[in-house]
Length: 457
Image (cartoon, rainbow, N blue to C red):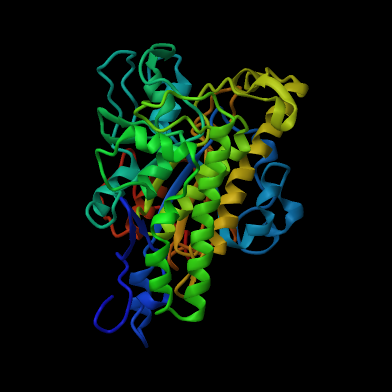
């Protein structure tokens, strides 16, 4: 506690080997704080949610053009994007943006490898299946370097499908390109973590870096909660909080326990691991929807507690063979269906997969809107990009990408519009504009030609 009885933004609930970060509380803002102080206490967050293999664009693009009003009516949204209708006033759809780095540029086939590697780097990756990989620094990592030392984790790389790192996955392009979004340097990929347990322990687990794996495994077996160790500290804190903050704390602790319980449930149904297994158990749900929800909940908690402000979520890898038989009754692999050659039955199945994927975005928006922060919500203070590095999967098109930009970026964005940009407008222009709103001012990024206009009015 500070001398003026405020709670520090960096306060932790401490217990036996555990330190739990706090969510944003009203008690963290000085009494009679000015708007600038409130804004400083609720910084902008950025997340990139990626889906592979392209989109059926006819069922994605709104039927109306730019501007607030008619485009945002539910009837103007086709099948895939009809799911975002409840949030049409809190997001923008951007048409016309392209990722030139995903194109062949003389390197022949390999669009899926290039799509993954170029999406956030805005560069053309070197064609290689060996160790001499070379792409670019991804936009999330440019922002993360700015956050270095500000938050406990500069960034968080999450995924919902396991992908190998190395080997030839796409016509001479390494699997690393297809299965990684974030690059800290042009030669250093940051593979996503797909295990909810591993993410949970990283965010909320033991601070003892050399924690005994046997003890950790025993804790999992007996389903003890990390909250058990911090409850006394939590009760002590709550005696000094106002009514609204007490509710926030109760909701936050309940969210942590809910995620923990769901992970434990998955682990009970998984194959038992040896007692001396050094890494966290797999904890990966067989159901894609539950896996995506768990990773989203972990992301929201990381943002809510200011453990990080930057994240990427690879919902599925490029060339994903994943079938969605149990989830939506489609037993064929996703990637194979996208090579439909005009087959209406296959196009319909791809459309259904696209409709299923976008529910993950809606779930994230639901969760972020429910978190109250200062003068708004977590969603108000965020910029969430959802999309793919390929538009038409059958043609491997890297132009006119499907792009949704959700949130208000701490009041720097004006959502509720569909903006059509001229063809071949670099996606990198959007990234430069987002970096600017994060307090980063790069002279250039990838193949950018400047900032993207009309994001605010």
